[in-house]
Image (cartoon, rainbow, N blue to C red; front, side):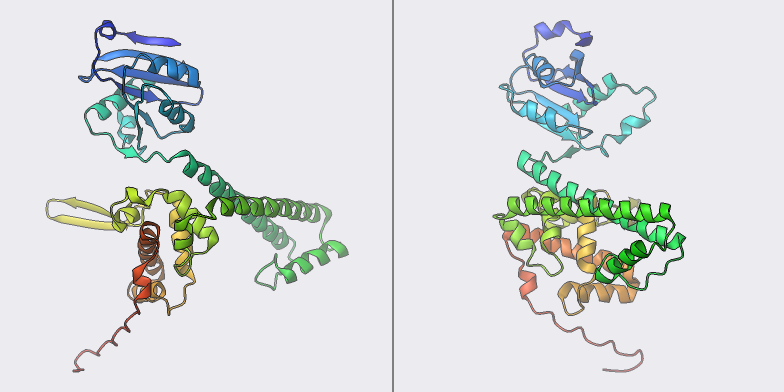
Length: 368
């Protein structure tokens, strides 16, 4: 281990310590400070549980530890939670410490020290540390999403190859029954030049393999969520099925960490940007500062809802005033509020209340 600073206070200080960790892929810098901000030790370690545990043995009982939510933080958090000194572990939010980028001098030592200072002063912007079961579920859900994205990319390439060869695609789904017959016919009759035919054949084999892997991870995900009450509850909401339900349960995690539905929609980045100074207030587009998968799931769930549903009616009402895109986003935000109550209470009371018909607008100048 490479040491930067070794303070003489380390031998005398027996108070609570604050530890900042600047985590990297291969090595990390750890800074231990007193409750007044004096540096006790700064050391660079290789990223191994043993090296991290050795440094933490010098941090006393119940230290406060902070590390940034960066690449590969799982192993460090799990190692810290297993220590006998029982440290309180905090995860710094990446957006909250973005100001580090604007310092004139930026290095690992300063980053670790500033993390410890923010924690010590009570000004640390924190992220939620998901427990291991939630992180394992996220691995399954996110990998399936990556596989589906790869399959979509392959499908787009097949369309592009056919367009280059001037082949018209009359059906809406090239990879349905009729589309598959079209591709098989092109291959059997040899109507495409060999390089193009070879590329399409390769893409179809890749898609077959991806289909198998996608089905495997769907089964693994449903097996883990079979007894989850929240997973069953969110599927009672119109527009949300097993796939979107698994995304919501995995990405949101413990819904009780949000004190209201508004807090959840804000975390998901579905609330408008708010800028206020003196008497001027400006509200812009949604922030998009949250889980992309949750936003995607919410938008997908409301796109095709029929108008007779509560959310479908709300979407169309907003769309009539402000356009379809804004109507969909507003409906997605309202849908996420329903998801909050489904996860928290196991049911959504608003869905059981009949929607009152909206009164027709009275033409201007006439008395109803």
